[in-house]
Image 1 (cartoon, rainbow, N blue to C red):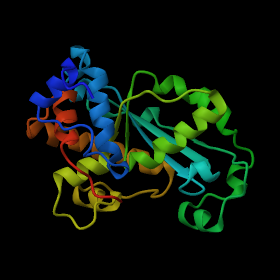
Image 2: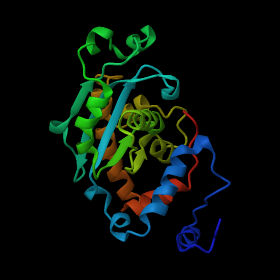
Image 3: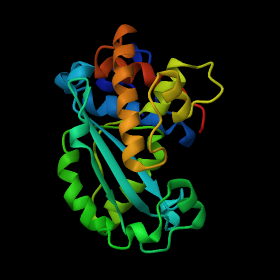
Image 4: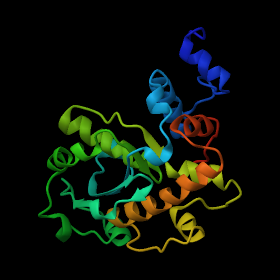
Length: 244
């Protein structure tokens, strides 16, 4: 690696390590570092105050955890956060008709049955309808690795493209803000911050609750001196997140 590269020299001055320290389990740490490398040339993006960034909070329900083994998306929920506010009137939700039956265990967890999805659109149609809403946003998810892996797999298979949006994993922020928690689940975070738990394990319900949590945490971050995307990237790229 050419450590004389201006971007890498800039990262070194900021105290950001890149390279051998990264492993696959530190997915989000690597995402933040790659985002920095991509955005450092564009000071406008890096200097944007957090409350001015258009975020899109996303949650998926899936038939399993391995898209490379044929597990599929069966529900998508998204909620915009604009100017530091949850835009619940713009909530998007749809079921997705999978190619294979939904396992009983997944139906028990999510409440989604084949009856719910049999008349739903296929994932290719859903993506084509939904992607315009994604353009220009920073994606936010709780446990983003899962959601992004499924979206990338579906987009690659059906559209021959990939998501290029920046991604923020709220789980990693939970680990950073509350390192002493023994449990960094979404439920723990919601209870701690006084957000009512409603429609848990539904894509629209989880997306809306995560959006409400994210708005609260934007203010917490600002109070801690994390004012911009650059501040957030730098802080989170230094922190290794325990596996979920």
